[in-house]
Length: 505
Image 1 (cartoon, rainbow, N blue to C red):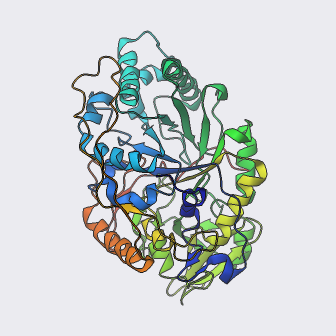
Image 2: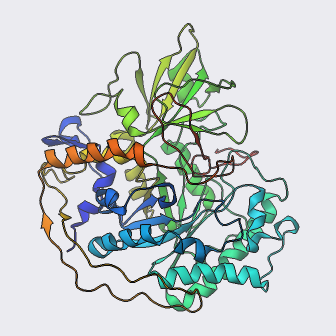
Image 3: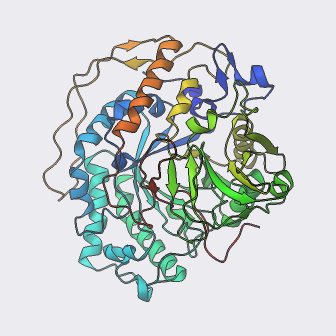
């Protein structure tokens, strides 16, 4: 069964259509064209959930980036292949869904952001700026990755560039050494993938990588969001995104724009929020133990300037009024910066006239601006970080962008026989056989029932999410969910995309 193209796109407009009409019908916005590539990042290593819990998210993208390991999971001496086999049960469920939805499946490898990077064989000599291609441990590490790709029918691999923090964390090497070894590592992987016709991509931040050879990769995912960490920027406005894309200086057809539906709440000092937002002149208050309202995770700031907290769309939507989500509930006030095409809400801190909780985020209007930008510059598409983090948006995915208000995505009630057991050895490249003898029974569920199920799954989600590894400041993507106002610890690599002495513009 094959979905029509607009089903691959509705994840982007999950907040553009509500109840019995499309968002544009209510709010006068024109839907942009469908991007050719829509990527969803799926951090499977964080969750005690089955892949079926994300079925509707998976049905809305062209590529799933399967984040199998936390950034420090490969630093304990256990190779990638053994680590992957240890979580085969999670992967098995996803393969059942892939056979039904037919998206591209990419394994995404996170690398440590700090000195732990030296514990990975390919980066063992990074302090001297050397890459030892003949080192047997380096070759075993890369062969493990290639074996995973081939044995488990991945369509390719994505390597996450580690230097995306607002300040450089490592003390044992510098960015020049990092860039050289990273590019040599990419070239080594590329050479080993060529016989198998697999995709090689990278996930990077706002600054290009010195010596990067764009000819060996399929595309670059630019995490152009959360630019406000350790800066005076608001977030990821169109004006800054244009500068970021230009700085990379490679074909726009190889660039993918990273979008995050949630936002960062920060405590700022301002005499005029609207003016300071437009001028990118917000002053972050440097305090510890700040109590953020409605925060669902605390972001550990590696620059140690201040702490930031992340809001999911669920918490944002509690303070926004449908159908257009451009009105707020008191005491929050909404603004929209026309220059950056970015919405924000703010609330005065109690007993203060100049201190505000400030949240820069995405809404339908800003998303449409970003998608129009992708179309204008002829970029390849967009990437959503993470689709599992934005689950509450899927209450709104069923009306389509073409104006059909009650269309729903069919979901199989009985699919597939069991997949083969995982291979016992990493030697050789044994291709997993074709799944046979499966039954597909599709049902069309009324939107009201689907939305109810989505909400129920969402309510269960916080009870199932776990953090399986010890949290460190360099653990770039790990996160723990908590109740409102509970302090939880998280990563920063997916939230920060700059280095110390560089600024956009």
